Image 1 (cartoon, rainbow, N blue to C red):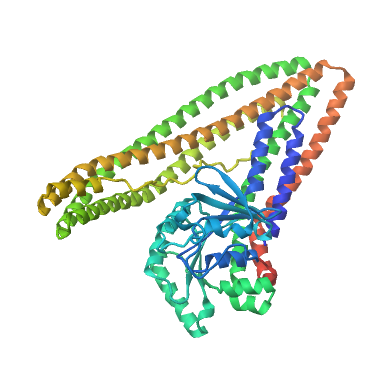
Image 2: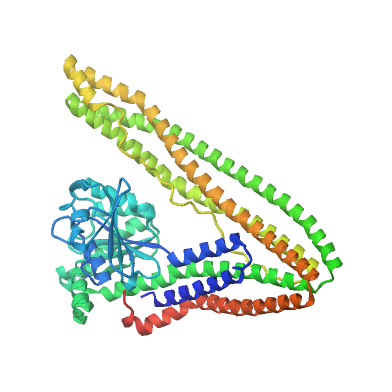
Length: 609
């Protein structure tokens, strides 16, 4: 699995190292840093493939089958309680990360003591997550396979751990079983998953529990039910017996593996990881590498031309370039003012949306609270207080969750639009720099635009934290029981108190959401702007360095000048070789879809997860 991707990844890393070596003696730390950053991105290419589903659907067994090893504990009772992340490593190593920041390395036999409900009930040990390095070929290329606790069990902390991880997910294997088929609670969970995960593979497990006729009936039923949730695109459900798959892979029993339907799942995953995920990353990184190489090539050509030019003529052209550079730097500052104005405009838009949220939903929540108060008048005071607070909390959470799902999409679209405009303006500034020097020194150049876009470090989503307490339940019950007030009067006081607190809590939560959006927005914008401005500075500095070196060579002796010219000629030959390698890689990446499709039809039986 992923062999093609790994080969292209290794080639691209070698190319980036060659580009880096072209500038290693030039003390250009900014350029070298940019190359290293891109290489690290290619090297890591972290991709989170997460196994999701309700408890006892066979998630851990499926992970073990993919890895071809019994590394994760499995049992009859609901077991997994901690998110477990598995990545590639040359040797097996298990690291437990605790919520207080501490870490501990353990061996496999003690894994059950940290990730299971039996060994770590209600997460009493304060585990944040477990990270496993494991030498599985499946995990090469940056794939992180993640097992999550099942939702819907009696252990609420397990459900919360899975929900907390959703914003980090790139693609998901959504497991449900053939008997019973997909349930309403699973559909509710799926609706939540779709808010965060765009690529979902549906897997109906435990097909070995029913005969072929019942299996087909169950698959068709689940397909029709899923259509009601997805409502767009074709629904494909992959049948599976994770149990047979694991047994077959451990014993290398081909018949069991075939009966498990694991090869079909394996083929779908392989195509996705090598094409949809890997191709996009490789295309983007290859384009960026071509841009970096072009910058180096231009500076070498510039130095060559300048060395050959008479000194007086060279100094005149340098003076003209400096004047143009001053104009370009002023334009860059104006570009930054534009960017800052866009930040303020987006935040003003967010403030208007938050006010609209309060205006539209506060009356609804007030009315809901009033109706629930009337409906629950039969309850004793203590239960009435608990019920009303629960209604209020749930209303707040639901209102903000629904609002943020919609607003996040709109905000991300604004991010993309603004960042694209700023990126385009920055590329225009860089192009003007190169054009100015190219025109002065008669050098042809190729413009390569890199695909840059502003991305927040993580999704915007509403973090409620601990459920907010709008009323002191214990204090209220104690007060009303001591005063022996009539139940109806006490209930009215409770309802009145909650009604008064509701607008305050809505306003406070709006402030929390705004603060979260603002912090992420500013951090992302500032980092993005700094990176693009650094590219302008790097381009300008590269041109100036080349011209200064040429002036120095003009004043040096003939022997030293000839040696420099020979060195520059050798650099140009190296650049030509790297450019050809990148051209071939770009062509192979872009045509990979058709080739992989053909290979998949001819050789699907040889593909292995």
